[in-house]
Length: 402
Image (cartoon, rainbow, N blue to C red; front, side, top):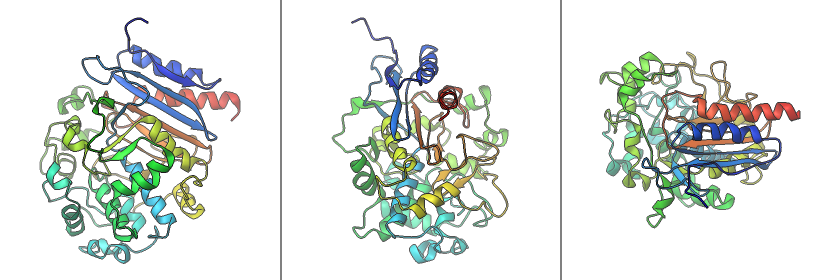
C-alpha cells in the first residue's frame, strides 16, 4: 500500500455516490480533515472521513476520530434535556422558577423552561470571568448564571449563549434528576452509552488522545479579510469591548479566536455549549434516534412534537442580539426559517457551529445529518464544504423520490 494521501474512507449506500464525490472534492482541494455521516429511514447511507488530524498532515483522519465540535455541542445538550423532559423532570412550558428557583430573578422569572433553553433569557454574556478553572466548577457556574442580570429584557429577543446554554441545561437536569447527575454523566449514561455513540462532555482522563483531530483555526483578522456571510456588526463587535457581542464571545478567549479552546485542559471540562467532543458518526447516531421517532432513547411523542413544531419566537422577532442576524432558536436547537432552510422541511432541528460543522435531525424525512471538520472556515453557516455534501444528499433523495 502506498503512502496515505488524505483520501476519503468509509462508505455510501447505492444511490448516494454524489455525496462521496462532493466530500472528496473538498478533501482534494486541501481541507485539512473532516467526516460526514447521514442516516435516512434509520439506515446509515453515508459514513465518510478523510484528510488529516493535524496541521502537519502526519496523522490520518480515521473512522474513530473525534474533534471539538464547538456549538454543535448545544444540540447534545438539547437532546439530553429532551430526554429529561420525556421522563417528567420538567416541562418545556413550566415556569423556570418551579424548576430552578435561584434563576428566577432580575426579570428572568417570567420565562418558561423552553424559553430559557431557546436562548431568550439574556444571559449570553456573563459578568463572571471565565477560565478552565472556573468553567470546571459546577456550583460556581450554576450560581453565576442564576445570578446574572439579563443582557436584554427576557423574552423580548434571543441571542447566542456561546457558553451559558451548557450550564443552563446542566442545572435543569442536575436539579431534577433523581441521581443528581450533571450533564456530562447524564449524556454518557443515558444517551452515548445506550446508542454506542462517540459523544462526550468532558473526555475521560485516560482517553486515547491520538484519536483527537486538532483544530486549525482562524484569527479575528480573517473574519474581515475573508468575510463570507458573517454580518459586519458581528465582526465589528468582536473588536469592541463595550458591545454585547464582544462580552459574549470573547470571554474567555479575548481575541484569540475559537481554536484557542482546543486544549487538553478544555477537553476534560463538561461544557455543554461549546465543549462537546464527538465524531460525525456519534452525532449521527444521536440524531438518528430523534429522526426515527425517539423510541431508541425513550423520547416521548409530546416532546418530539414540541421539537418539530418549535417554540414561539421572541416577542420582538428573531434578530440575534449577539450575532446580529436572524436565528430561530428552539429548545436547545436551531430550526429552519426563512433566512436559513438547512433541511427540506421545518420539522428539522439541530445546531451549527463556528467553523462550518452542522448536525441535525428531521423526523418528517427521517434524516439524521452530521458534518464536522477540524479546518475552520469563516462562514456563519452554509460553509460550502458542508453545504455541497448536504445538497448532494438531498438531490439524491429527490432523484429516488424519497
